[in-house]
Image (cartoon, rainbow, N blue to C red; front, side, top):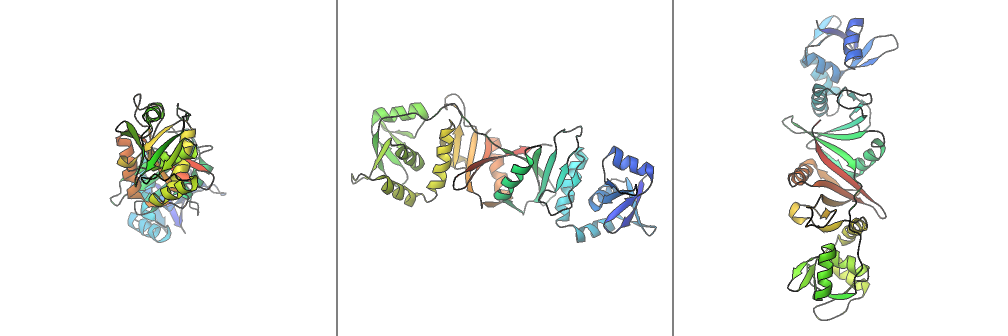
Length: 349
């Protein structure tokens, strides 16, 4: 027999002790009121009605599922996205609760369940929403101390993709080495280094650049990094030796976002990682924890500022590509002094 409830405002009140036991004590629907009844929100009522476990009345007249959905659509922002995510997670066995607040967190699970003993915070998004990296960073900072943060993405056909949001503590096995000082010629997209001995050291020790004859071609970020470490003196094809400031201005003119990239590149190198371009994977960098002859790159790094936003379709493609090539998708979120590494991983709840 279905449980019964009375529609009162935006709540459905269940009064029978047997119904309360089934819905609340067994399945964690609703919340107990001061007078001992059970109050269900509209999402819960729609889910239970659709599952043929609840009959809702108003003034002793049965309320249909269509009536409940209509009411919810008029009162709950982004109702369809919120409900489809709620239904999917409930069907999977997660006793989540809708926050019904202005919080960006859509659902929480604070009590252990057979599926997880860790508290969950879940944000539901439509595929047409934007990823806001500042919001993601703030949410991960506050929620990951004692639990997990998931993103639930609902596409236009109602299919759902889940992402696990975590902080990434990236470290590798190869700290920066020291080298004799040398010179290199700055061209439009790269720097050429003709000192064969040092070229071999750079390539063999830390996988810098790529062979160019007996020398080496370096990316702009590699060149500026080595120049900042007083290993590389940059010259022009006209044999002009550039000062540090001239080198920086010349490279910035070629690649305007070089400072942001260099900040991340330097930090990754300080963490013992080998860092190479990630262009063919649609990322800024790919990073190795050890030499490439021992392992493939483990991380694809996307360098962004704290005001970065993106449509979810772009994020979905990037994360799927990272998983396809067995790499982790990492956002390096850059401020003036700090870098936060945020990992987005595909999740099967």
